[in-house]
Image 1 (cartoon, one colour):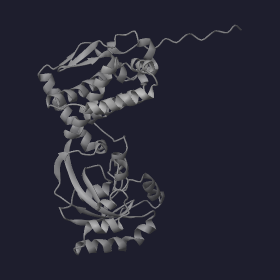
Image 2: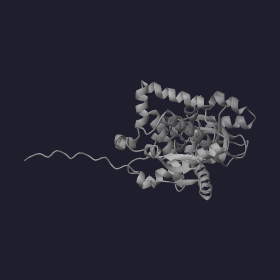
Image 3: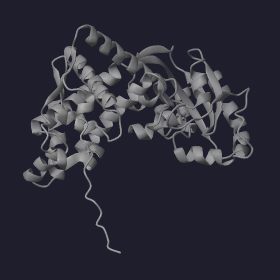
Image 4: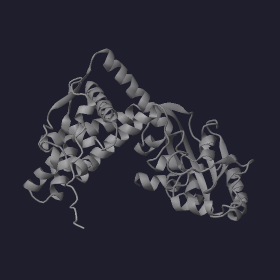
Length: 371
């Protein structure tokens, strides 16, 4: 079962992807009477317990989390370059900058170098040059930390990625042209880039340490407020059976309508705050281990059990990095890397950011017409 299938069957995290509202059986979700379509929209999302923030890429961030957003943008742009072969910067500046020395070292981070080509690959016209360079430095700080920790890239995976790119570009000449157009100097440069991305992704999860809860649930799905009322007795009966000693996992396999977790005994794994819809989220972060609670959301009724004590632990699911808590935790770690690097004079900017911005292309004047 892939991550998207798993996500489609659980209470929604409450931040970026789908916002489900979970409440105990003693309270009401309070859906607006004039918005009966809320249920249909929630079902269309097909991510029963997860919130929008956890299933989309638009988590709201403030303060230092803006830097996490910038790092995410950098990684996304690099991946687009590698898989598609074009960036916004190239669309605007591409060919006129092919005479620039893209191998020029513009900054150093520890023993890693930042080249002009890397800046051009990540710069979008109109953005702040300083912020773009800052993003790249943050990225390099994480890669440097990975190497210091003894992390290495999987060369077999890199070989497969490069072979995939070769197959997309027909012949060796086209492949070489593709690399030049996106400011990647050579296959060796591409290999380095892919290796750095691997290391970054590894550190991203290992060093995003936040409080997480491990829960499981049984979902009785509804598509209207009337159905919600109709199925409450059924949910209460399942709750009573569990409280009477029935096997939760077996009941989940038999009754849960969450396709992502039902056949796994309802297990949702470990998740941070903001991954599930608010009511579900509030429940699992207030329950005691072994407690079972009936919670309502726009997806229906959830019988939830908190399986273990909550604990601080690294993120396991990359999708959960979209939650605000995860982004803030990772950003805080990067801040500590930057502080240490600055104290040890490990960041050296050799070319000022404004000097790296290519000139806007000159457009030919429009022909004039005689009256």
